Image (cartoon, rainbow, N blue to C red):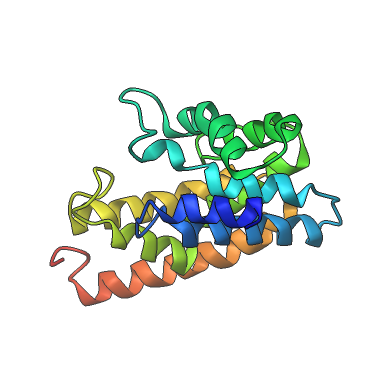
Length: 197
């Protein structure tokens, strides 16, 4: 079994509708696509490794109360990557990619970190972002109920585009922002201005 297969298997242990292995795959593939669209030469192995460890800090046994999941993922990355067989010398690159992946964080200057950050932000936008947030209604403190999920979708629609760093991501972000606009407009029309959710 390759180190990639071992990492996928480790991430797949943590089933979650919004932060599961499908999210890992989408973020990896989108980061690589954004880099390719911009003509950037990226370390695809480091991107792949980062994709499958970037949210592990949100799940037991890795999660630590009071520690942001991104920071916790950085802390556990060496252990998880070593167990998978990823080269120790390249772990710091993965850690830098993971450290700044969230929409509220600033990525490191290396291209892999910037494209990975943008890919993770984009996965909170558009139809996929809406689906992810609706999938955790009642399951996560971000979205304790449907009105809270709709409020968060609207907030992300308004705020996340400004968190994108690259032209390639902004082009896709405009499309995904428009998908969110359309969804919220249709939902408002069907629910008396969101009063009957």
